[in-house]
Amino acid sequence: MIMIFWNGSPSRVDSLAPAPDLDYLQEMEPGRIGYSRKISTIAPKGIGYYATLDEGAAPPFALDHDGIDDDFMEKASVIHFRHAGKWVRLAGSD
Image (cartoon, rainbow, N blue to C red):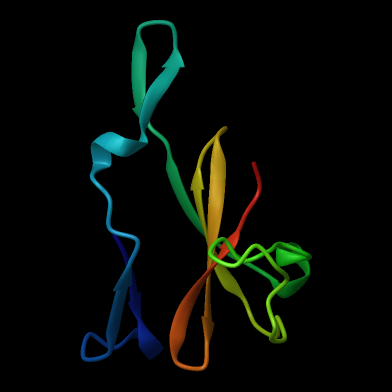
């Protein structure tokens, strides 16, 4: 899962996107399996025109701060974006 420590404090923690590590294993090269989940920040400009996954339309709010890019490398990603006190899932890259 992704854990967010607000202002670096262990007293304010959010967690999201829990998934078994097994879900992110893939063959890296012949005969070699590796873990392929990559988590990074993504700036509003990088989020661009992605649609929300649940609604299939452009988000009805401003993309005015960074999001979290949750990437299954070489497959697809989801962007987690905090809006109005809740985490919203946006489509990432394929």
